[in-house]
Length: 401
Image (cartoon, rainbow, N blue to C red):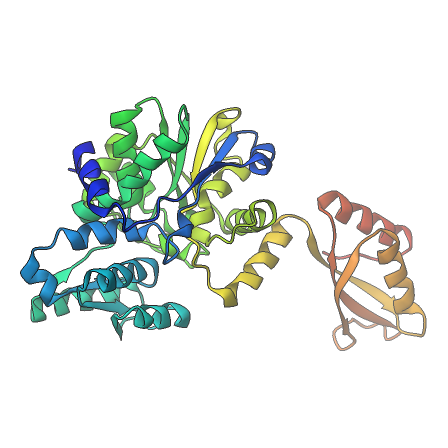
């Protein structure tokens, strides 16, 4: 069980090697959510996530003979990057086992940081099994991403910074995967500012802490694909859970549409590119999951920015759809000159912008004089979509959504 003294010691240990990221007030997010929002920008760490805190603390706790021998970690991204980076700074050999599906950019970055990268397994669980076997075979220390007291204490240093940077706060909202970050931050809050509500957020596709709290012990849950891939943990750690059940006041879940919309809002309003896991605190507020925070001073821990650039465009499109700013519908048009022009003129008259039009003659139905047109249109929101549909129906078009 970690205590405040462990986190305080970790802070002194990692001081100078970790960026003390800013925690700034956000006027646009406050206006959006109705709470007084402050954002802890830990995605600004050198490798793009809070994982560096726990990784550096764990590495510095190693005895000298073990430092010379090296460590092994298993991760699909952020933990691997954190261990690789601080291993290189401290002169500790690092081997990272990553699943075969790991994003190529993260594999490349780990190698660029000097780590030996092994690709094995279909998921992080498989990679972890291989990493533990390597540790036992070669006498290496396995650095667990969350079920490790030194790692949890290192992550908790973010909580100390938050209390200094955003005094008099009422709540802190934290993403939850394996449970280590919220355990560390919660330990600090309950020791230093027990009135502060500690709220965890999980994706619906990986609600492992929710399941553990319901069962009274860590329990495995089935995983589904999620934009918050950094939180896709099927079972919370034993050590984090022992702390979480004492220091976490509430846990909520968010769906994929809310996560995508939160990523979009952060880019548009805060000019911050944050990965799905890091966007879940905002997702919880904009999805209406935390109405009790209205008017309260709330810190959102934006703790990861390593979104796959190949996925970012698709995520933004999903966010635009969730926001009612990208809509798709089908209409039938007379298949003769002027039919399509009439359709596009009505769309333009409402102020909407055509993103894509697709003709479908083969499956348009038995009326050979008509062609089906699938329209993807940019709008300003749901009300605009409704006005567009009304205008089309008023002009005699049969609109199918």
